[in-house]
Image 1 (cartoon, rainbow, N blue to C red):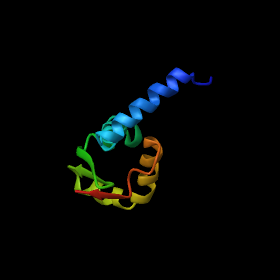
Image 2 (cartoon, one colour; image 1 turned 135 degrees about the horizontal axis):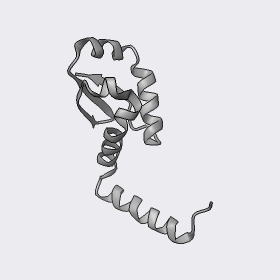
Image 3 (cartoon, rainbow, N blue to C red; image 1 turned 90 degrees about the vertical axis):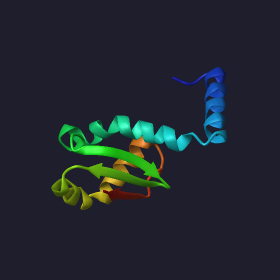
Length: 97
């Protein structure tokens, strides 16, 4: 189904507002937080204490040192999955803290 002109105009206005007030990074962070459990599953998400994006770096705080070590081997794969979920390359680096 093709979008109408009205829908495209609203989308353009929203995009311009997000750009003007620099809200896209925060919106991406909110989208990522809501998708994290779906991406990683319940077992990993229960050990995640915080997740945020700063300067295209994704910081993930985990309460399990063993899980932190295990996930550190999959940074590149995880980065690709997250960027795909966000719809563009928002994450360049992942840090487990």
